[in-house]
Amino acid sequence: MGHGRKRLGRPWVIGVLVAALAGVGLGLYWFQPWKLWQDETVQEALPSAVAPAAPPAGASSPSPSPAPRLRTLAGGELISHEHATSGKVKLVRLADGSHVVRLEDLDTSNGPDLRVWLTDAPVKEGQAGWHVFDDGAYVSLGKLKGNKGSQNYTVPADVDLSRYTSVTIWCDRFDVSFGAAELTRT
Image (cartoon, rainbow, N blue to C red; front, side, top):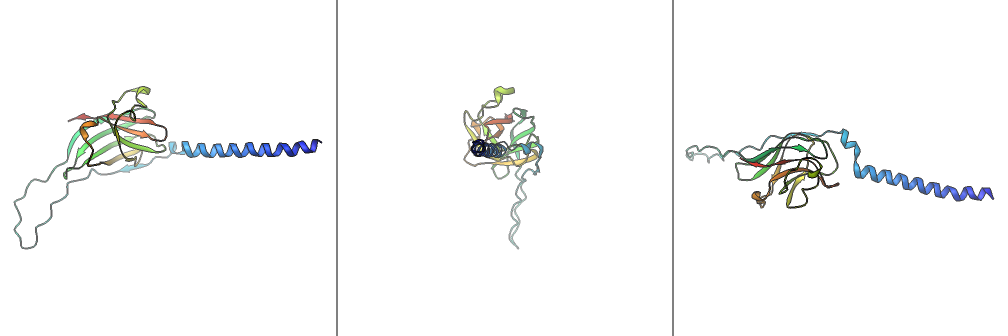
């Protein structure tokens, strides 16, 4: 009779082990803890003005006009939220009239599903500011290219920039800000 009990116990133990392993696997996929020790540095130059096209051969060249310039419209300093974050944020109008959000000297933790968002939320210090950025209007400018360095994020042409007052490094998986900056108009 004791022999039958051991057989009934084995499937139960195996089932618990399989469930535990599946839970660990899902937890590793969801949290991706190894990213906390992996840095991704991206160093992009600010896009420069496009040079005017040369006149066709034999045509007289028009008088030189000053090249269109880049203009910083707003900027701010990143503050820490869920993770220690530092660096500068700039909203820049390029020579062709398009806009980019530029992160300069960014230093934050790596994490799963990090995005750069342009938002209308106020930047608040401490835990009060961790979850406010998805409460109002926001535009995702794409995945964070790297957790360190200087990077550019194109703002879609149809975005009304007057509606947005801040930028956040947003963890879309856990709905939390790693860090954010208030945009002060220049």
